[in-house]
Image 1: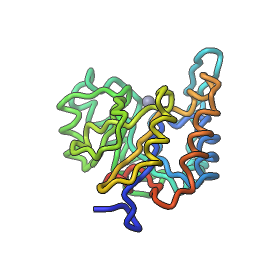
Image 2: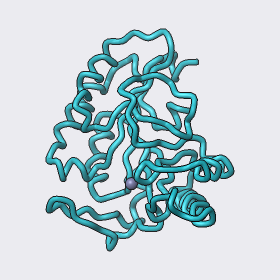
Image 3: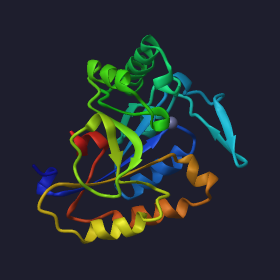
Image 4: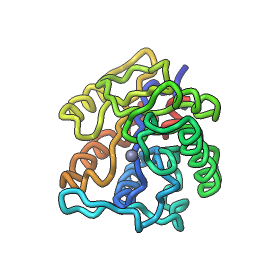
Amino acid sequence: MTFPNNKLKALTFSYDDGVEQDRRLVKLFNQYHLKCTFNLNSGILDSSSQWEEQGVCIKHMDVPGLKELYQGHEIAVHSLTHPWLEKESLETIRHEILQDKINLQTIFDCSIQGMAYPYGTYDDRVIQILKENNIKYARTTMDTENFNLQTNLLELKATCHHNNKNLMQLAKEFVAMNPTEQKIFYVWGHSYEFDVDKNWDVIENFCAFMSGRDDIFYGTNSEVLL
Ligand SMILES: [Zn+2]
């Protein structure tokens, strides 16, 4: 198995929550021809849904214009209202996942295949509901710091969060490697963290370094994983 054009290396991103800062992040990914999967909570896609972290206002976006904003990237489930799923009843878990999938398919006129767990947490009931609803992969908040393919896509781990102190070291290793089997560099986070941490340079430098390489396939999560 290879990625398109017989490539053996792929880079993909996963960003959560659908907040205003996604606009700047999408622009950056588009500038470098990189592909991301955005995990959205369709029940709280509303600019009145907001909070503050270290003086930074973090606002969910309103639905109008989102289809155009995220054009070329993938949309995935992040639950309807971002609860701790494992604390909810079976009925609520099913509603949180299935209704989010249905809403997102309507808003974005696409077939939704993936998910990122809100807060990264889940239990066996959550996984069972994903299977019943044809969700093919679901991202946790754990980092492997490696590029190996994973067999359990419903408990998918990332290579690293963008704030991982080894991010650029891993990037250099990935660029230098000449694998004989498929390898994936998978980065996750929240775009608002760049405002809170005042470190947009981290993702700008990473994107600039990783982009435009002939031996790397740049795809969304589903393009890379499925
Ligand atoms: Zn989230």
